[in-house]
Length: 110
Image 1 (tube, rainbow, N blue to C red):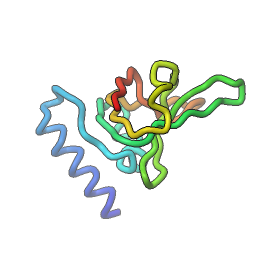
Image 2: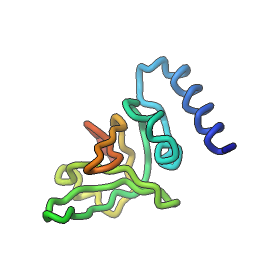
Image 3: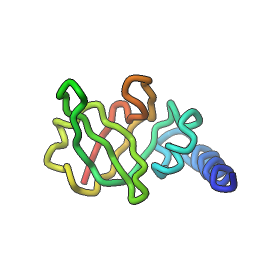
């Protein structure tokens, strides 16, 4: 409960500080803990880029932190050279019942 309160306070402070003009620096654990609050927010997250395949064989990616919290990437092709490396990703938090939590319109850099 305390962790969630701290995460919400940090989110509110970041939004006020950024004036919604740029991405909010966020942790994956905060996003995963309160998906509904973060959905629609442009964020900047860091973690390791990993690649997987869905049951139909389509590749997708995730960004994972040290605590194994993850956020998905619907496409991985543009960033295949970064798989297995720490990355910084900026995108809008979104949720799809068939895919889960993901970054929409991501921009990923090493």
